[in-house]
Amino acid sequence: MLAVFGACGPWPALAQAGRAPPPSLPALGDAAELSSSAERRLGDRIARELYRDPDYLDDPVLAEYVQMVWQPLLAAARARGDLPADLETGFAWEIMLGRDRSVNAFALPGGYFGLHLGLLASVSSADELASVLAHELSHVTQRHIARLIARQAQQAPWVVGAMILGALAASKSADAANALIVGGQAASAQGQLNFSRDMEREADRVGYAVLIEAGFDGQGFAGMFEKLQQAARLNDSGAYPYLRSHPLTTERVADMQSRQILQGARAPRPAPLLQHGLLAARARALSNTGADAQRSLMLEADNSLGAPAPRQAATLYAATLAATRLRDFAAAQAYLARLTPLLDGDPQARQLGLWLSCETSLAADDLPRAARALSAAAAFAPLADRPLRRPELMLQAQVSLQAGAAGSAADLARLAQRLQLWLADHPRDAQAWQLLASAYALQNQGLRALRAEAEARLAQLDLAGALDRLKAAQSRLRQGHSGAGSAEYIEASIIDTRYRQIESRLKEQAQQR
Image 1 (tube, one colour):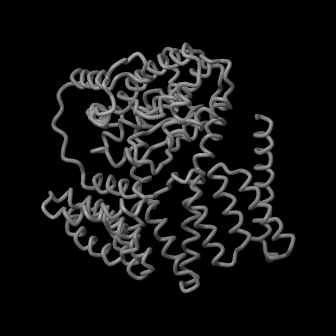
Image 2: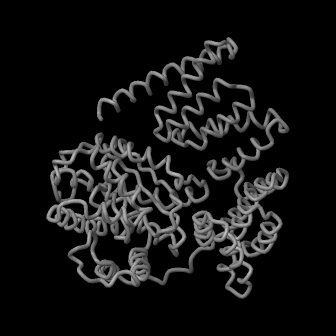
Image 3: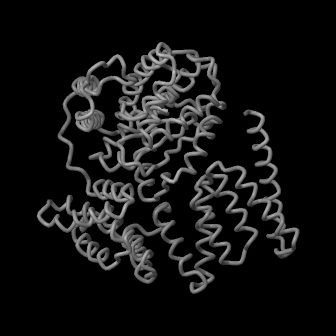
C-alpha cells in the first residue's frame, strides 16, 4: 500500500508493502512470484478488514462524484494498453472512502484503493482529484505489489497483508508507526525505500499520461504536488532525500511542470465548478465528526456573508450538514434558505442542494418535505430520459422505508423493483442490498430479506456473516415460516446454491492460510 504523492506519517511503511501497474513497461523485478489471482486474494483479505473499520464510509453523493472522475481514467488506461484483460476482469477496481482528515490516498493489492475525505476536502478541482487517482491507478496497473513480493521472495503474501494492515492500524498512533518503520534491518529497509522511489516515479509518469488521455488537465498533477509541498513545509525540511520512500515533492513539481511545457501552452483553467466546491465541503463536514468541529463549521457559515458566492455556498452546505448532525434542524433549514439562491443557474449544484434538503428532512422525520425535495431534484432530468443515479435511489429508499407501515404497499413494491434492477448491474453494492433487505422485511418477505442481508455481507467480503444469514434462511424454511408458492421454491433454491458457493470459498480461504 503506497501513500499518495509521498504524504507524511506512517504511509512510507505501507509503501514498502505494495501497490500495483502495465506489463508493457520494463519490469523492476520478476512479478511471477505473485499471480494476479493471488494478488486479488491478498487484496480481498485486506479490504475485508477495511470494511469493518469505523472510519469506512459509503456516502453515495461523494462516491458518485469520485466515480465520475475514476471511470474516464480506467477507460484511458484501457485504451493505452495499461489495463490488460486479465487484470480488468480479475481485480476489484474499487475505491473505498475513509473519514480520515489527512490528505492521502493509497493503492492496495488486487485493485482496491483508499481515499481519505481529507484529500477530497482539499483538492481545488476535478483535475487535482484525477491526478491523485491516476497516480494510484498506475501503481496497480504496473503490478508494483508483485514486484515488491518478487524482490523480497522470503516474505509470503500473507506477511505482506499483515504488514499493510499493521501500518493501517499504526496510522492512528505515531509511536506504533515509528516502531513499524524501524522494525526491519537497516540494509533491507534502505533497499525497499530505493525501490519504492522508482515505483513512485513510474506511477507519476504513467499516471500523467493516463490523466491526459482521459481528458483532464495535466496541471492537476503540479497543483496537487504544490498543495502537498505547502502542507509539509512546517514538518519537512527537504533534507536527506535518499532516506525517503518517495521522490521529493519539489522534484516532482518540477517534473510535472516540464511535462506541461513539452505538451504546449494551454488556455487558463476556468474557476472551480460550484459542484466541486459543494462536494469538497461535504467531505469536510463528514470527516469532522466531533460536536465542536460541527459547531465550527456553523460559525464559519455565520461569518461568511461578505465572502464570494462560491465560498459562501460551500460554507453554507457544510453548515447545513453540521447542523443536521447536531439535530439543530431549525438552523439547518435557515442555512438551506441562504444556500438555495446561490445555486440558481447551476443544475448540478441545485440538485446537490435538493439532495441535501432531503437528507436534512429525513433526519428531522419530515417525510413530506423530504419527498418534495427529492421530487424537485429528479425534475432536473426525468428518470425516463436518463440512467438511475445512486444518490437519489438511496434517498428514495430511505423515504419509503422511513414511512414504513404508514406508506403504501405499492411504494415498497416499486422500491424493491428499482433496487433489484440496480443490483442486477451493481451486485457488489452492499448498501443497496441492505436497503432491499429492509424493503422485503416491511413486505413480510422474510426469506428474501435474509438472502439480501447475506448478499450485503458478501459484498463486503464477510463470507462468515453471509453464511450465517443463509443458515438463518434455511432454518426459516425448515420451520415452515414461508409459504409453498413457486416464488418461495425458487428463493429456497437460490439460497441453497449461494450457501454451497460461499461455503466452498471459506474452505479455500482456510486452505490458503
